Image 1 (cartoon, rainbow, N blue to C red):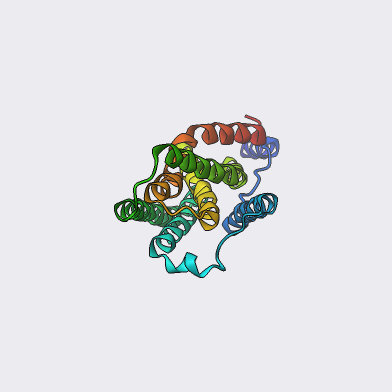
Image 2: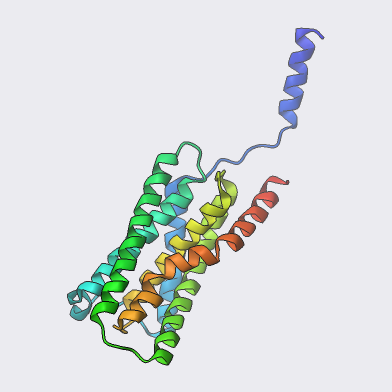
Length: 226
């Protein structure tokens, strides 16, 4: 085979390849995730009439409430950064930093919840679990748009561990949902804060890792025709 025929063959093979779609910028993906979450929060608040209590002095005067708010913010941001960055080759340091931040925030949230339990009053079991389940479900509903946006981005990227990335994305989205719920909920019980607010990102990451990974895999096959 001559060098000319080899060159022609290579050019023909290259011409037969499907164009590769570039991965969107991280800031674009992060902005989309936050925008969809904010839209869900505004829509839900408008329908229910329950808006964040940021304007109430009592909200900021309670150290446990503020500590949980901080923990949920860091957990959500860290987890989403870790998940989105894992889909982009060469952004491993950013993904690692996000995982460290999210993990540290998870420990912080558990500590805050236990602190609230230790210093709180006893709560009736029936109302405790009903209220905690209500806040957990509300947070998960608010997390759906953000989780789907993050999953779509993962499906267009190249995460090394799709299941782990999906679990982290679900935890981050649920952290955003729990953040909104925490800002509107007026229940101050210690067990309620632990079960209904602090543990929400961890629970969501465990429960929805597999379903979100399956969805992103399906989207990826559809996008790339495989």
